[in-house]
Amino acid sequence: MPEDAEKIHRGLVGVYFDRTKTTYIDGKKGILEYRGYSIHDLAENSSFEETSYLLLHGKLPSISELDNFNKDLINSRSISGEIIDIIRSVKGSHPMDVLRTSVSALAAFDEEAGDKSYEATLRKGVRLTAQVPTIVMAHNSIRNNNDLIEPNQSLSHAANFLYMLDGNIPSESTSKLLDKDFILHADHGSNASAFAARVCAGTQADLHSAVTTGIAVLSGPSHGGAAENVMKMVKEVGSPENAKAYVTNLLKNKERVMGFGHRVYKSQDPRAGHLRDGVEALSHEKGEPSWYEILVGVMDAMKPYQRRGIHVNVDFFAGVIYHLLGIPTDLFVPIFAVGRIPGWTIQVLEQYEHNILLRPLLQYTGEHQKEYIPIENRK
Ligand code: COA
Image (cartoon, rainbow, N blue to C red; front, top):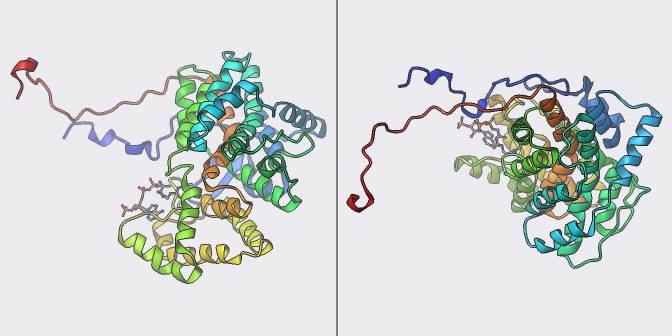
């Protein structure tokens, strides 16, 4: 065995690669803070817009600062005809692929695309935060052969997102629930997509490149895909009394139960409880309580796994909420991206501020000194 084998940290588990002043996570105690503020206070009292300001500027805004920030977001919601054409040309792809392609293309139409100054990157982060929901919903309209729904300037970020789904102004309670979901997803330390965005920024690539990278990495089922897979699972379970047998069967086949486990949280994911309350209320409000009951059945069946540090995570509840809000299943991951743009932006800004190329090593375990045989002599 090579001398330095013990130095390998597969998956970079437990490795600190830099410092941050943005998000604090204590996985053992189940604590999450943005800029020193508890996620519980933000989920209960803040809005996605205010939380985005907090992440990007490092402090809670005054009334006028929030007002100006809101105006910047609202004024940046529209996307150009060229981007709509690009969406049309790839409309048959998965919405995450469409989003990745469109965000990459946005760079071509953003005058500040190549400007990596702090101020320009911050402005681009605000623009991307505003444009991404419009891209997601424009694609949804286009693929369903419906007319495009222009963003509604009088609505909040979350309410406007729901509005662009079907042109109906959503109720305050549903807007608030989605707003909370966006707050809970706004940043999460060095998760895979933020790390990938930092690797990209570490080469001094621009924000559109880094966010495109983040979207690509988020699309995998071990990261952003969990909510979509939870919904598939819940549909397969079908009714609450099937939950136990379904989960037992999955575990017997060494398969993973979606919406459980987390690389960092080995106790309760502090975000999960906020959505649990929301899904319970919403499933009763919509007259479909069985969805919530199936979730409870799956949680009961997974209780023995808590001893191994496998608890329910935020995505377990998110999927059923989106479903009850009438959002198609393949838009669940893009919704995660909608909430995560401020997080990726601030992480890229932090990376630029104190930049270093992120370039770990791979320990070679292949062969050496092999003889090169000309192609005509090979068997
Ligand atoms: N269901 C069943 N078993 C699980 C599990 C799950 N959801 N998550 C982890 N485990 C088990 C693994 O099988 C493994 O068991 P083993 O030691 O007997 O082989 C052990 O727990 C450790 O798993 P590992 O993949 O090394 O942990 P991780 O910290 O790298 O995994 C996730 C984190 C998120 C990738 C993993 O928990 C998972 O795949 N969860 C389901 C997908 C999901 O909900 N993702 C959203 C995260 S917010």
